[in-house]
Length: 255
Length: 273
Image (cartoon, rainbow over all chains, first blue to last red; front, side, top):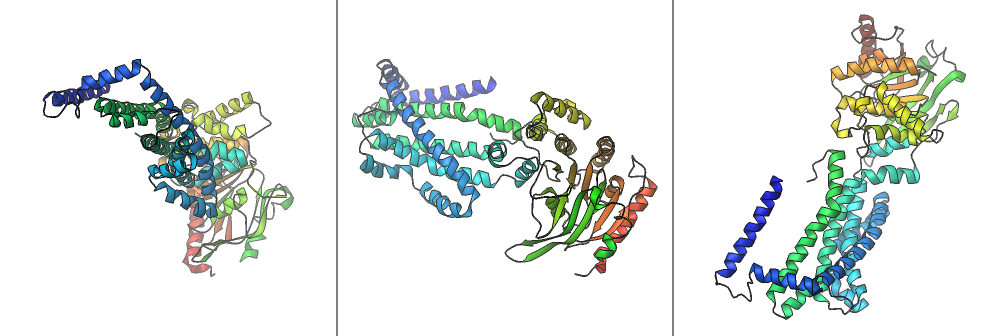
């Protein structure tokens, strides 16, 4: 409760400072809109449905792309951890492509898929999959071998060994890998939405983009605020419970 | 040297037919990029059903490698291991291991760890599994900690859970790889009492690897002494003391001293390679 009060106090302080700065009149209200005008924009966009539609479109792209990225990345990461040849080939490919900023996939995706949802998904998947492979590979390799040895003496082998021992043993690394994949997916989707206008859906990035086109700073800042809030919420909802679980069981301080 | 070991009075009464475990001519080499290390050299031993055999030797003499091979976790380069007259080809739950390193699964609580091995026993119902898990946790004195997480336990408690986990599926052979090596002396002495009580109840066949002479003399019916690498079994000692034994018992200390003297002879260059 006390922490909550401190956090809300901090946020209120930021907003007040912002409001005071914009009211001081030193900067043009076109470039530095007040808190109230941004709030008015957000309220209006929510009422006429543009904001909720943009959030829906963005979240759908993000979740589908992320799910595909994880579904490809997890097994590949496990495979690279179990074979030196795959580590040297797929592993180093992943390492190389992970250093490529995901926005660099956008021209490629547009040429291949045109201005379609496919291009969006492709960019998100490329943003996610490599970091998930690397994190899973690393995780599976750093599991203490004693767990598998102990389990094997008790008669665990094959699928049982993988699902009941190796998978839970690598949870700390999987969670951090999936969290990293999520961050990459989120960033690459925003880049793709800002760069690519597509007619099938109007996401948060596009909202941001048109804010710039229309010189509507309240829309630009409003979209940014929403993007930050979604990022924070996703972290709380998707990853915080896992991290709490790991903290309780492993006794490690994940926070 | 070897003949002297394998034939005399100590192993004669233990006829092969009744031996629970037979290790015959086992050798093991480890190949690293730099060198090939000869870990075990033609090791033979027999363990009768219900017997507790302690294997002692200087560190790096291949004791743990020997235990790994008996467990079926690694394969010997020469020789073989028979359990109940059948060759050991891989790990099996008739031979469970208590390791020196903490080997409990942190994603499971104490009860879940003991249940892990029991879940791999298809002949048991779930109710029976839970009942057995409760029973063995009570046996090691941890019935109040069933819901605890592994990291909340002390080192001694962790090894008690590991012991309960190994005992619960009712293996015929228990392999213990310096299980108390990382514990403080007071905790160890407690465990000696507990473990003797548990063994006298269950009459398991036990191979216990240690580098602690008094531990070996306290727990073993026999003590086998290994030379430094390449590991060979160089001497047998009978410990004909009544149980339960105290490690402060004068006679027991005498036995431990004999083993220690022999070990010093071994290390002091008595055995050439």
